[in-house]
Length: 257
Length: 257
DNA sequence: ACACACGGTTCCCCACAGCCGAACGGCTTA
DNA sequence: TAAGCCGTTCGGCTGTGGGGAACCGTGTGT
Image (cartoon, rainbow over all chains, first blue to last red):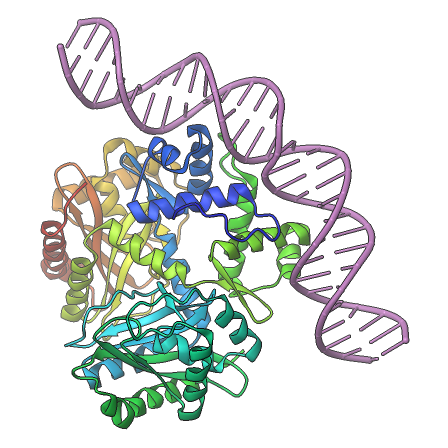
């Protein structure tokens, strides 16, 4: 699963690929040496060596004892990225509020590369542990965030993403065809919020509301909780209002590009 | 100040340099298109184009409307990096405590590339604004964090860094020679904590204590405040104890490599 | 104490990766 | 309709970046 040459329309730059595969390994392993990287990535030591030198000069990584690890410059990059997407402060405070009010997990996500990426997440005091972490990705078709965003993306882009999905059944409830998905998107547009009814993870339900203006969706806010506390009724009567309110506040404090 | 070929021992890989210069520009500008990048970086559009394609395939950046920006994958990388350095949770909670107790700015930093990099920072309720942000860098010789770390680095590395500095006088108080610096490092080792007496920024003083075991320094904790509230006496009598206590707690909860 | 193994580093050479220029296509503005 | 601006595609020539092998410095086992 490491090396997959997927998208071969047009050439890719090999040495850049190598550089980033090095970074990937360093991220996973949390540090490695020349020889280790060389055999892991199947390149000569000299090749890896000059790459490491280049990355070190760029201060992307640091010598740490007997190997290399990624440098804190990444943290600075992360701060910039965060601020570029939307009004991070507002997003954070609204998501935090949501988590406090409900005691559950609240999240904000956007679409990237046909998947949902989490920009911010708070775990309320009785929040269940989930796999998602800030910066990680989940499928669009199995999450309330993903489906909600999808419902408000430009038609063309929606089409593109819907068609490109592999539709793996993560639970018995997962949507596994483009048709079902289109139906659900329609339903979301009608009621204004999206639901994940144990479609991504058994025993968990989520509600999400979009942050958008007339033409663009920025992303969506969601709350996640165990089905026992998140009954379908409670979602429609109470929780949907809360996420929508949060989404509105973020919307109002966001300059759309 | 953007393109400086500094360190020419050994060859660097050009295309990787280009890729990262693109990333740098995208970080600064928060997004740009092919043509813009091409002239900014003085390369042909086709070159930039294939680089962008490569980076997009790697999901390092995303098409956003009429340009590209860095993707949220960076946030995930940042999380990993944070966790690799030390026990992030403990560092955060201790630094937070410090900031609460004093109401001022508390920080944790490590040495990277001969500079101090900030891993975590909290601004207490009356904390002054400073330039430092998480992931950014400051000189070793003008900050309490830098000098304190320097005092406990392996002799060889200390030497190397001390010699490599440019010693710019940021304020009238800044240490501007290797000799003065060596003296101060000696003083730090004797008393166990380092002081920045308006050496980095006029009107601000800092105290820092190292996090180390017998052979290694991980980094250092510091508090920063206006000289009016941070009198020299108060630093020695009271604040130095507080940073040292925090440093100790972090130390005890850290597995050294 | 020695030699051996293992990691990082250096050197040089050659193939081909990657950079450029030019031409193209799509979209907006006048 | 034409002109400008953008991203994209193409092909060719050149220099760069990848590989192999030899080197060095350090740690390890006997």
